[in-house]
Structure formats: structure tokens, C-alpha cells
Length: 76
Image 1 (cartoon, rainbow, N blue to C red):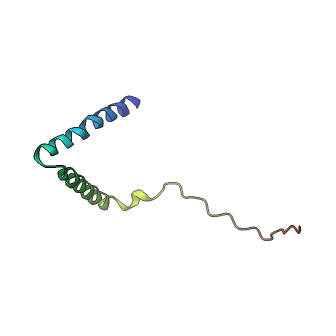
Image 2 (image 1 turned 180 degrees about the vertical axis):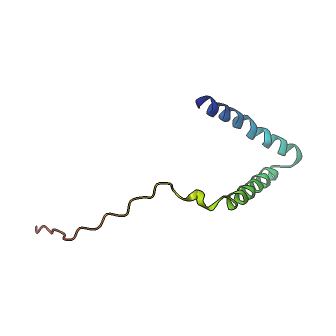
Image 3 (image 1 turned 180 degrees about the horizontal axis):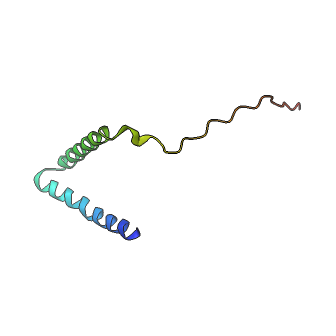
């Protein structure tokens, strides 16, 4: 598993500056911001279409413990 993570880290370390370099060949620095905005919109669109049950947990949390019936007050 560590080899997979290491490969992903190495590729992302090269791919991100590479994409930015390609954008800068065709557009000024504002092109980077436009590309980041477009990528955010794409991610938002993908997230909107995910199955709604993905946010449910498989293990339901236990109900809250009931408060004690009587409270003890200590006089000072």
C-alpha cells in the first residue's frame, strides 16, 4: 500500500506543475485561476450526482444516555 501512495504522491507532484505550465503556455496567470474555478465546478457537479446513501454510516451511533433521575447537590 505504501508503494501505491508513494507513486500517487510522485505523480501528483509532477502532474500539478505540468498542468499549470501547459495553461501558462496559452494564457496569463489568470488562466490558472479560471482552470481552478472550472475544476471546482466539475467537482461540485460530480458531488451533486453521487448516490445519496453514501453519507449514511453503516454503524448507527448509540442513543444518548438518559440523564440521571436524581442529582446530588453538595452544600458548601
